[in-house]
Each structure stands twice: as structure tokens, then as C-alpha cells.
Image (tube, rainbow, N blue to C red; front, side, top):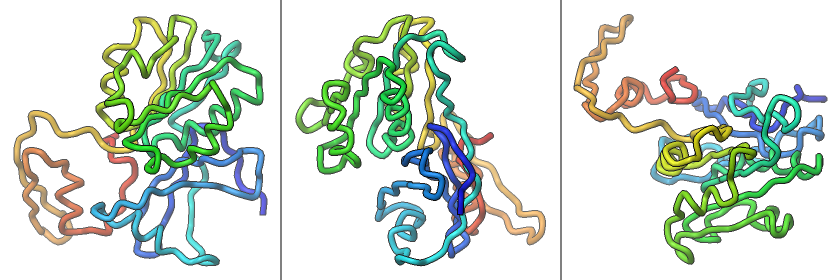
Length: 238
């Protein structure tokens, strides 16, 4: 059937058979009204969500929410005063960027992408992106070293809108050193680390069970240790 429409930057909430709920960016084509595409990096040492997704069988049914968007893409000349786009993707953070550059290309906008990863074999959709030619610059730690902010933001000026999705250190560096007044849009795919935390106790109201929350933990992390299937969303603390 025709699916609810979505725009570049959107994500869906996947409800897995175990009861786990995970959010994944939609990285396909919004014009395909009967298809959603997501990409899930398999993390053997993670919390189990990615392993469960990779264990799903062809034809198995799972539930997904309507698309939501906290990483909107206002277009230059309309909701944005920018004249060109600079996209920065780190690893699996490339997924929400993909529909953005496709839209920019389709509309004839001036855009460029810096795509970063440890090595080329670890970077999803690389062949798909290289088809865009000189608009895409690939930077790997193995070949080029850890990217500097100057490399991430090459060509950025006051007329540029910057879109970034990647690991926390990348986002922190871009937010710290981006030229003043530059339009910046970003999305995290992992929570911020706890800074200057203090330990405390968390009590579950119904069971009166008490969990110790460490100084470097979030309440959710401690709760998941005793309730691994508890529902949660983005882990950003909103």
C-alpha cells in the first residue's frame, strides 16, 4: 500500500519482535511511495538491536512508525538564506544525508559532501555516492588520517548551509569551529557522554526495585541493565 510521505532527514521507529524499539534514518527515495529503505550497521558488542535486525528473515513482518523529522532540510531560496550546501557524513551517519544530496542534485543546487570513515570497506553506500563525481570527497582515517575541521568544512562560507551527521567528536568539532553566522543543521546517532555526573539511586515505582546509577551513566543506561527491553527513543534526554 501507499506509505505515509516523508522528506529528507526523516527517520522511522522500528518495533522489533523482542519488544526493542530502535530509530533508523530513511535513506531511500521519498518518491517511492510504497517503499521505505533503512540501513542498519551490525554491532556485535551493542545492545542487541542491530543483531536482531540482521537476524530478520525475508518476508518477516515488523512494525514501523510514521516517519518523523528532527533533521529538516530547508531549501536555499525559500526557508534558507544559504546559496549552497555542504554535507558531512561520518560512517553510518551518511544515511540521512543520502536523500538530501539526491534532492539537491535533482533541484540543481550547488552542493558538496565530505564522507568520512575508518576505511573504505567500512563505509556504506560508497559506490552509490561516488557516482556523483567531484561533488563527493571521501576521507578515510587509514589513507588520510583523522579529518580536520578545515577538511570537513572546505569551501564553507556565510552563504553555505552545513548538514552534519556522525559521531559525537565530529559534531563537537564542527559546532565549535564553524564560521560565525553559518547556517548549521545536525543530527546525532549516539547519545552525548555524561559529563561531571554524580551517582544516585533509581527506584521503580511499581516494583520498588532500586538500581544504582553510576557517575558516568544515564538513568536509562542503568535501567536497561535490569529491564533490557524497556522502550526508549533517541537517548538524547528530551
